[in-house]
Length: 479
Image 1 (spheres, rainbow, N blue to C red):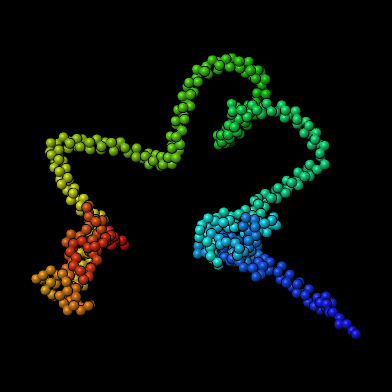
Image 2: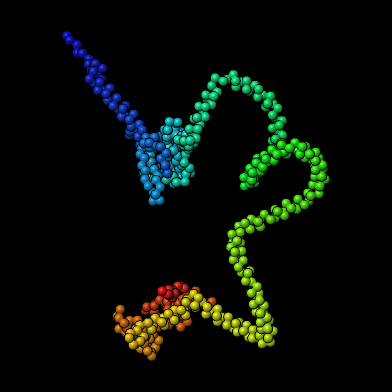
């Protein structure tokens, strides 16, 4: 009797190979798509708008508090209306993460020194959250993170080249000289020991060492304008000392007289100290006038050039001024002058309000000039016989209340057929007997002749609105 043989799955090489290939394919698929998130895992998707993607690439991690919560699915650049460029990041976060508040902070941080980046999220406090598929906008003014490239590019190319040369020179100079350096440091110890008290004295506030170099700078700035003069001074001193070297007796005599000169200086110079102080104060006060005088010297030079010829003829002018002053004296002593001036003063006071009221009529509205220009323009047409008046007929409708002639009632409404667009439709009175002329107390406008015609309404007096003070220019250019 034959027993039935049991068939094991492990004994089938084709099945084992198929299962192995399937597992490898699934592992490759999962590893390939790991940057996009694991498949079949629910995600919370949203967009983030940043001023700059800062070197992010598709598939970079999104972290919150150091924990990985998602990945960057896509990066797109776009242009704003003001012409600036921003980046839009599409993030896929784990669905277990709660929705982000609208004031969540977003930063692009370096993950390593090799340039790998990740997106860091910091939770906000707003109760309002970004919905699924929404957009989280980061302000344009948010701080830009410091990149590793910024650190390496902190110095320009010449500085980096100079640093390289210095390191190479120092390395070459110190190589193999350890013993010499040790000997130098050993000999520097006494110097540093004795230097400490002197350095302490220099650093003391009483020495005012900090003012030494600014004083040197000020002294150099003061002597810089006279550098050429000082150069000539040293050249002259060289000739002087050369001459003294050739005459030893004269030099000896000068040295013998030096003590007596020093005694006189010791006795007399203290008495001159007050005069020197007052002279210094005087010249200090003269500094500002001299500066102004230097700035005004070009104008003074032209004034002197113009004044010299005038001074030559001034005696003749003075002689004529004498006769003029005598005539003025006789005029002032005339008893009729004072009453006449008093009457003239009263006349000016009476005319002042009228002139003040009428002045803007001409100065702002140009009324008189326009009047004479229009009169001249009215008679500008001519033929072989002579000039004639230009005119045009205005024919309003003849109605009971018309403005064409005598009327029984004021022109205050339609009196015609009532048809829209007909000549009889508008029969309203438009009268402005006292137009504004920009006079004191009036609206600042030139209303006369500039009134806008208001249809289908009676307008008596000043028209609504401000007509402005602009008038046609009447200036003529003579050729």
